[in-house]
Image 1 (spheres, rainbow, N blue to C red):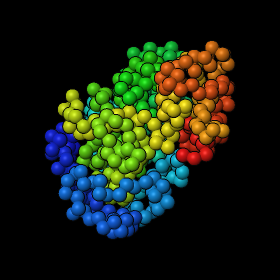
Image 2 (tube, rainbow, N blue to C red):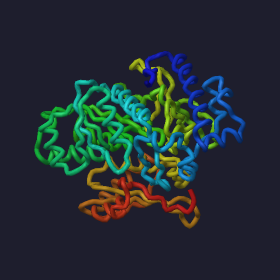
Image 3 (cartoon, rainbow, N blue to C red):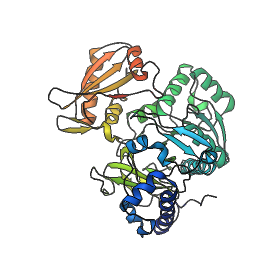
Image 4 (cartoon, one colour):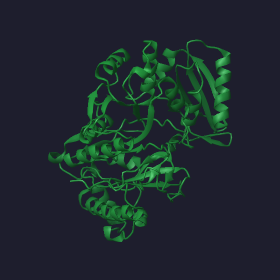
Length: 433
């Protein structure tokens, strides 16, 4: 059985328990994972070298390209022990296949019990689950198992046509929704078009995954503001990582998403692999705890965020992470200014008249980054272009090239004729990353 949550214990108790679990994880990986067995032996590292939680830095970082290249070398169990297989989307290279044992599925469910509890969910709730649950996606399965483990109720609405979704909301009367921000926005607009009073619906809260709804200062981002105006629900932002089978979730104070300390260890590092001070942005690095099928040690996620270690007003002492600011590989340098596509997206969401969009990055003739924003709209007005340039400059301090296209043209670029599992909002054409 999994150990109980540590989040409401003292920081000292959390660190002591994490140290024990870390030693267990390193010992297990060194014996069962061909990849870690080889690399730890070469570097002459043993689990006994870890005498405090800070000694985690003696372990080598695990990179995404290693996971892609040596995927099966990370497996720690034989085929008979595998209960489920999921995969990453492959948007940053070859997809990674993640194996889960029955124990890992239990861990996955327990993680979501912690996350849904952070958002105030109880066994009295009924959730409208509007996420993908097939095509080797981990997220849908995780939420479904977690809601059931919590003792709450759930129905798998999926992400099909809006009219069907609205009908289910009216007939089944859920108290919460789990989905991605863009779909919730479509759903809210569809309800308004049907002239249904939003306040007459039973839904009170929404847990959102896939993109952050907050800016670095925890205020609502452009998409967050638009969501709240369209459908004023109690919004909770979550962050999930498939490779480590983990998620973080905001509590009611919404000042960062909580780590579930008996299942993961959180680090934030700079470009040189060194820890950064609390509040400073860096790359999110994760070490799995209590994982059987494919444990990962110091896995570099590529996501940029920051860490908060002070006790939360909700009473949890667990580490929190801030909103995801962007992907490390996607950082753009434009005329001396560093900017992430997510910041541009947040600015775009604040402009009315935009139906869809895609951001493209190129290498200019001077080898600097060039940014082109293609906007799908029903009416190509110069006033819309000026408003976009003004908002983007105000929020990011850069002024990219803005092109107005039809909604259909941008839709084709986002989906690449249906080849991608997720709609793209950023394409990187730069010569070197």
